[in-house]
Image 1: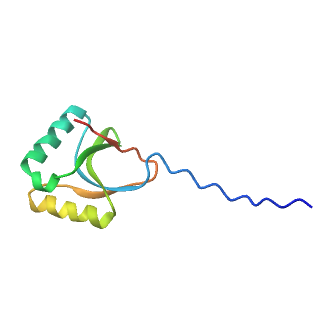
Image 2: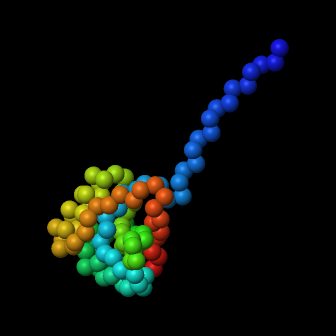
Length: 106
């Protein structure tokens, strides 16, 4: 009598762009202008932006400029609070599974 082979279900593949937590700090369609804005912000508030990279995500006909990703929404809100305290304007945002968010680069 043959032994029954148990098949373990395959793990679902991680989405290329999983849900993550960010803080949106600007919008625009010109990537060079977004890079310039990010450099300007990091020079103005170096302590707030220490260790952060710029990322972009499509948003209608323009793009979001975001920083992160953060471990959770609470961490994103903490960055947002620090950023606002230093005169910045932004808001915490969660990208859904599949929403493209790519590093902006230098």
